[in-house]
Image 1: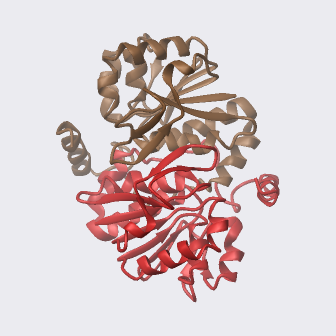
Image 2: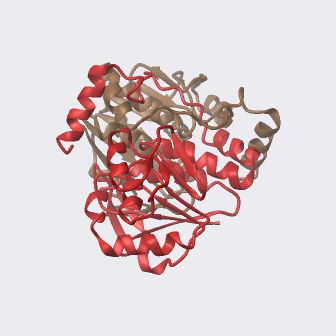
Length: 209
Length: 209
């Protein structure tokens, strides 16, 4: 299976690196990174990642995985990116996204009437882009698989491996990355976090940070 | 706070990117990446990451975070790396590691008699390097903070932010990255995974993959 992850300045590094660490461990799978051009991309916060190919060098893929991040905003009006997403989506076995990556799929017109999710702050915008927004860690609608915010991509990727290769392989990969999560707090969703923390995060997000 | 993450060919990308996504969101914190020289590093599986500086360009840091991965093995005999780790450790507020990153700290002589952890497959080697190996997602011993395998770095980083900036900031970051984990299986530790899965992962690890 060929997995293709398009990356861009201002992506959230973990949106890509979380699923990457799961999918690259699937026997026989290869994960490649594409961008505006081959070379350096700067994630939110400054981490440099490398795109190995330009978008147009990859015309088809088995799994398309679109990460999110503040940098996806300008791409939602970039016909080069939207056209590439539409063309490659037509070739995939799975079209997937993490966090606000689904907004990019939506802007490309690929979510019309489809059940999908995104970061909890952006579900309304997902609806404006034509999708039927659903909560949960990830949402499967046919070959469309969309994950909630950032870390949800890890859960989604394990599900994807299980769907393709069976539960044993998925469980082995989960054990290999010791994914036995035990966060020090129980504040990972707006339903669970204290209301003042939810308000704080909404405020910071609205400020464009 | 300055956070420094040394990266090298064959690191596990998620060991670095998980904590990075947490720590870069801490108000006023800056995360930098160092390597053998400025430029390209290839993680396990091929993802390209960029080191912004050579090791020697960073002589002190507040938080040192050492990721693991198969590529740490040759560095355990590399006096340039071990000497740099010793010198920088002497300047830190926190010296931390993820997964087999603690083996590098151990090889540098920084774990003598200290309580520490690593990937579940490597606890024995950690003892051979002089540490007192402990289970759990992460282990705090003074200013030494070591995490278990790969994804445990996310939990550790949230703990670190809470220790420095208080629980509210840590909870807000957890909500920002929507870290409300819900893995499709409960196989993330050797105690929880089916015995045949544990045996499979041991076998793959022993074969060097």
